[in-house]
Image 1 (cartoon, rainbow, N blue to C red):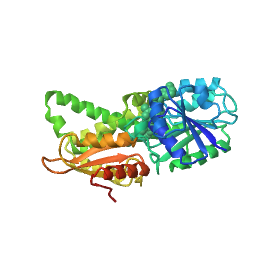
Image 2 (cartoon, helix red, strand yellow; image 1 turned 180 degrees about the horizontal axis):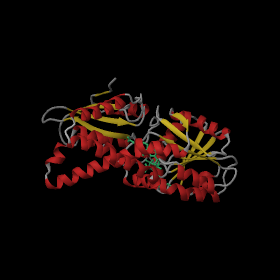
Image 3 (cartoon, protein in one colour; image 1 turned 30 degrees about the vertical axis):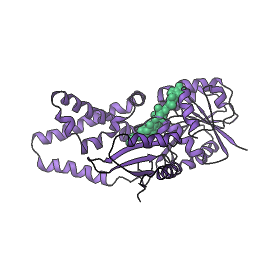
Length: 366
Ligand SMILES: NC(=O)C1=CN([C@@H]2O[C@H](COP(=O)(O)OP(=O)(O)OC[C@H]3O[C@@H](n4cnc5c(N)ncnc54)[C@H](O)[C@@H]3O)[C@@H](O)[C@H]2O)C=CC1
Ligand SMILES: O=C(O)C(=O)Cc1ccc(O)cc1
């Protein structure tokens, strides 16, 4: 007998959870989204088994419901769920990047018999949408669960067992502690990345060399400024309390180091960078995950117009999804290398076989 899981919001995170869960043939995944075109894409690429834009149809038989929509939409969805007919002992969980407000809201609004367990998979991407989803997005990442005080242990165990398919490390945490820590290690850095980019953009209005020279380090530390503005707006507004405190602390720290610069305190400036380097170098490495180019295929391409379009058309015609594409080298009259990233090993192999058939020189590394 199969178990039905409903995914509300089939985007990057909802799609990635669906892809991980559907490796288990006993699980049937129903996707719900406001956008029919996103659902069609998810169905056609095998991310979900069934799709609907009707919430009651999506959740009626579900044993577990994942709310994987932008943070501000989690509250009205909880309200809607509280009015609908749900399976007995259903677990409702979310994937929102903030936890306290959502958990408190669910506690207030959901009826008895519904077990709400807050969740936050601590991996993602600056990309959005189901086309960027991957069954290994959460591999080796932390996945925080924030059950309510009254949630039966059995519910937490059932959800943990389901989530083993994501290969994430499941941890249970207090929602406020989660918001404080994630505020410092994820939310605030996103604000800083955007502040840095906006500052350089302003300088660039006066002198376009700013943009041209902003390669290397600047690109690295501002990668996350390419994330979804709407998603980050929601996160900031829902973690206001902690972020205001972190920002005040950051301003003090900036003033302190700039005071040392002003007085040319050579030793203390060096010490400042030493401390940062030591802590940074001691951060745990994530061994594997979607951030790494796991499913990369390299293709030699003659440098003439239309080649890249031809390759993507060939893959598209066979419904082979790509999550990234990059030209690694193109110089005039020299063979270039195209790097295409696929969502999983199976799609990579299909792409490799297809392009070989069309006489491309293709290879993988490692
Ligand atoms: N993007 C990331 O790196 C991470 C995001 N999260 C959290 O995951 C959640 C989803 O984010 P993403 O997957 O990145 O977004 P996304 O934009 O890729 O996907 C969101 C999906 O929800 C749908 N949607 C929006 N409002 C809806 C509604 N009212 N009812 C049904 N569907 C609706 C959209 O059409 C879209 O398909 C957010 O709450 C975010 O805080 C958590 C960890 C990482
Ligand atoms: O792209 C990155 O580095 C991220 O920071 C991804 C991310 C975004 C939001 C989250 O709640 C968790 C992880």
